Image (cartoon, rainbow, N blue to C red; front, side, top):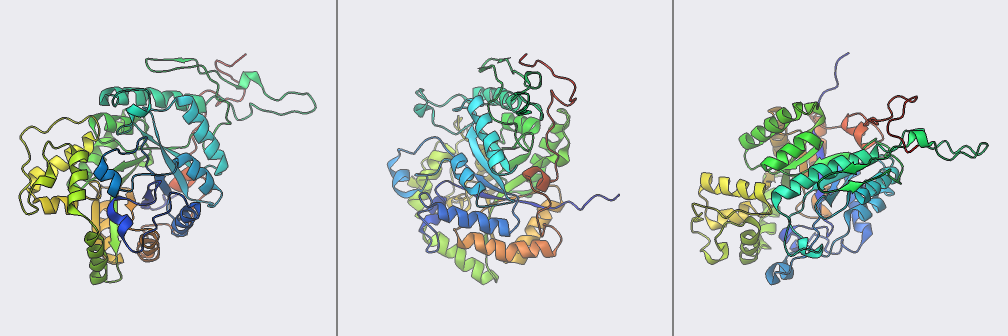
Length: 454
């Protein structure tokens, strides 16, 4: 039997405030989504109409106190992503629902229970974006952020505990037999009894086992430690790549690493971020992009980029047409290590002006494509068919118009080429991705229980 043709995957990148960067100033952009659930309901239903694989929410556990960022950037207020997706579960039927939750400033038991519950609320469509966080320690009884190496050490153990808790129950652990009075079978429920460097968790989990076995695991780290965690645990991998050769190198590296963990590379989907500015003609697309650029304040963007990138230079103090004077030794950051490397490598390769830098990197290091449905589909197809991506995480330039334009213009072109689905293949997130539900590691044999509570 022939295998079905490989299809491109599409995720939608969104924030709990509904907007990113200066896009909130665009005339067509909603600015009240952070308090109006109906906005998100419309976004999600539009994406589902476009057969998107997933709706993905990034999150931070802090609010900037920098006066410039606070005054001009829509980083807050924002929804708690798990709560927001629980609401959207009832407003959608097919799209995967992915929330970012920190392994640095959360506890495994709470996370395992929340995502097991979300998986049931959504009929098997939950996904957990496992992040180590870029900051926020001051909100969790600390004076500063946890060290990068410790964050990833903790993340690996966190993953072990959460997935172990999801395997607490056999599928037949709760017979609920009214005649005999037996609610649960203790032999079919397993304590975890985890004792590690960072966590001590007895278990079992008090929530039902997820519909999918485990919710889909997403991951976004591209540092050395991030790549290793992605190869071990990630299923949807969000990454940033400005250059197709760099994207191919990342793609090959992570999928090769995954082999040593006994994983199938085709069950790992690498989705570089991209911001498509789409118009029916190239001129229309350029006009939309020019309108977006007109609402950007270079001083604000450069201030934010200086803080974000940790380059050791004040970009805002430089003339816009000056070359970026990158120091020989760039200060080490404890936050965006992979994104800092992406930026530094690009500056050293391209030797850009300050103006070129802020225009190129206002998308957080992700590519910006300005074009027609055909030219954007050409780009996607080239990356997809030459080993650079399994799909893309779409960062819309505005909402709702940017979402609607992509769904109404680009998706049909991808479908016409046979690159993208025309309908959902299954009911659960995993079914639509074409990957199996995760079997329980301890109760595969209905007659055998391992380390039960008895």
